[in-house]
Length: 294
View (cartoon, rainbow, N blue to C red):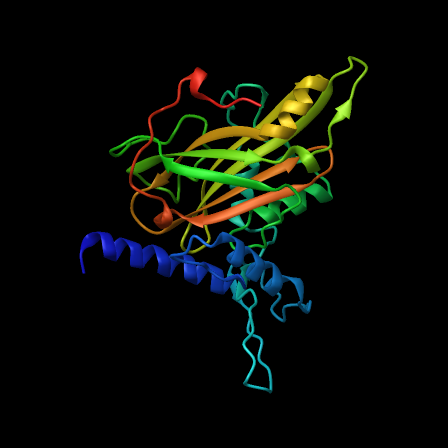
């Protein structure tokens, strides 16, 4: 088996495992997206919701397995196989609370700094924290897609400026990745101000997790958009675009968890993927004129 084949097999295995562990299905080697989409919708349209209270009262941020069995062995169950316990002692909370680094620039949107909603002391903060957890269900209130690629070739001894790394757990060398967001504005709560402009604030977050579920690095930004009527029509046509850069340790298995949150409504979108599924071809650093602007 040559190197390219081994890489492809490894990527498929990783994506298949993530799909199985989260109750989903991975589709490979097909351009028939319509059939794959119909199958995904059909499989996700009928389901049972079960809940339980863990018997263990230990205050540990451990991974907890879930196992569901039926008396009739002829049925196959698709469900989430476990979760990472969230509690006051979870070290991931500290990393998220400290993710207060300067924001990067985005054409068309004004940077307001770090993702302030991470620190909001209300129910939305708890919801956001749960959505940021590795392996948690991916909300689709905000429809989004991402493109991730190496931002540069070679190894970096230091993390990207603006990242909030867990320095006691994440060690170099690193690779720098470019994360490009494209989000639909249709479920974003724009407000119409006295200035006759439409305003919105969005949080963009990219988290790096290790294979044991420990949060290693965070890039968080809050941005504001202000548009007149013509700008809103164009925004509805093109979508909301933003990009971040984040450092990932070269050694060990890592996962990216990307989240978009509308500050006004609390609507969320999230996508998770293994770093192993990202190609090794770097993309050139875009200039300001290359950046897509809504």
